[in-house]
Length: 381
Ligand code: CAA
Image 1 (cartoon, rainbow, N blue to C red):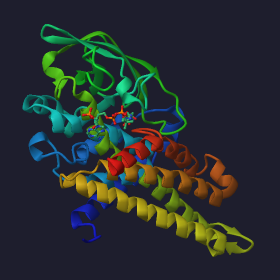
Image 2 (image 1 turned 180 degrees about the vertical axis):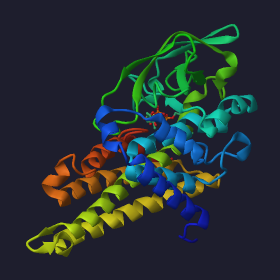
Image 3 (image 1 turned 90 degrees about the vertical axis):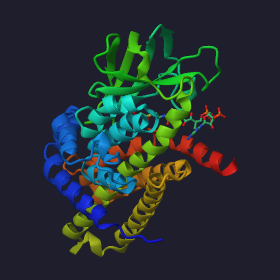
């Protein structure tokens, strides 16, 4: 066992950090305020850097890197802009990865390649208004009609919704089956007739990332767009979320690290009582606690990423990483605002945005209460 990053990991970190600071940081406040997803900066440029398909084999347009590289990339993007971090995470883990893991060769050629290359943006549509944590309660229907499926219903809270080109959509394909049985997954393209977009959410945080309702009204898709085995889509969704949680954990870690770095700099510059804030032990102790929590979160993430890369079971570990890292992000951003005092409460400093961005990491891709179900089920099985 060793804890050193490889040279490739270090190069990746440096490259993404420089990119995020130079190219994503400018305009970040305007994008946050106007809830604007700037596709050129927040996605097309990621494609040019080889990030949009980072973990996939070269033959599908990927960079064939491991999940630790992916986690580093999402962390570094989120250290500056959590909206960009989740755009990549939802695209790669939730939109593209299920096609890689469960798709036919034809589906990989047709859909995975452009996703990995970043020519297309991906999304994952599981949640419905009455099926959030209870994902098995999916009500959207898929009815077979000759050589096609007809989708009816709606999905909410879809990250990248409206902007994405390719969607993984879950629908009930066997109305007689109970709960999670009888749900299938489908690949649905943006311009398919009968597929439209509803309400765009106005959110507390990650405001530059779009979150939108999807509406299906007699939306006909070819039978070959069924992903994986008919009626076995729930498990496909759960396995996809196992991987997605590495991305969200890395996003949370990036938010915490970004806020922490801002606090260290501020404590050295700001003086009160003729001393820099860094000379006050009450704040020094906060720094020690935050740094320890951040490092522990990072190790949990690397552990789950390592297992994912090495084809070991990692669902429990990614749930632990997501749960812990998101709680750390919330705690650290709260403490950092305290260190900044009144200034931290204003929009003059980015920590206010980081605090707002942190909250969603405790909620999406399974609330932290759901993570506890996933973890305890694995331990008590
Ligand atoms: N891998 C493989 N199989 C799994 C699995 C996993 N990770 N998790 C469950 N399963 C299997 C079970 O083994 C079981 O199989 P059998 O039928 O063969 O016994 C089956 O799936 C049903 O499992 P459960 O009985 O545990 O199912 P449940 O209905 O009790 O739900 C749950 C379990 C963990 C609560 C699940 O519903 C869940 O994860 N909910 C949260 C959903 C979620 O994360 N939503 C976020 C959506 S994405 C998002 O946030 C927006 C975005 O765009 C980012």
